Amino acid sequence: MKKPLNFAILKYFTTVDEACADDVIEALKPEYGKFRHLTPKAVLEALFTGRTNGFLEESRYEMVDGELKIYFKAPPEGRATINKYIPD
Image (tube, rainbow, N blue to C red; front, side, top):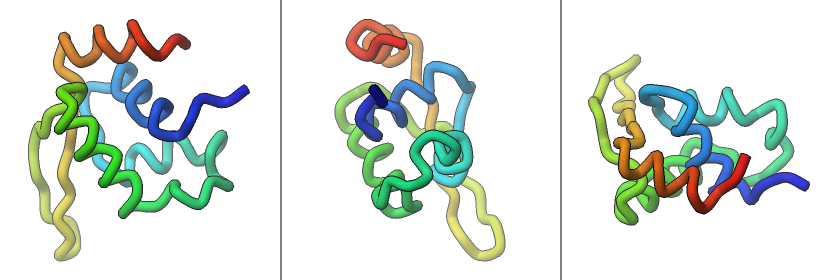
């Protein structure tokens, strides 16, 4: 059984140093590609929710073709909490 999409998004951050919404979508597309919430807007909302809840933090910003990309990372305490509550 697949994890809920928001759990998969958080869990992804335990495997990378940092990522933006587009990176998350590309990584999860093979397994979650048919989910209607695997969109830039919905994923960004999940990332901001993860930040608000202390699992993620913003790491940097970048302008790409006139679009602002916000990168997030899971700090050590966020990573530990994610791994504690979302098993592999």
